[in-house]
Length: 83
Image (tube, rainbow, N blue to C red; front, side, top):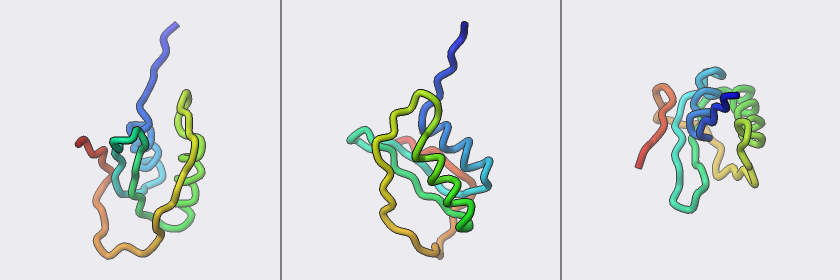
């Protein structure tokens, strides 16, 4: 039996691309994951619902929305930020 484990960031990018959302995702020093999503309201709602569950084998404790607004500097594509 083969088990494929994907990181939360890679799975987030895959889901965002599927939903045609732009933005980015990155790991934070405290072990949490931070993301910026841009899309219409329905796209964002679906993305946030996915984030509540995450990929298989993920343990999501909490999803916080820090700010929701129209963005003037639109993102291109969806990127994983490696810092």
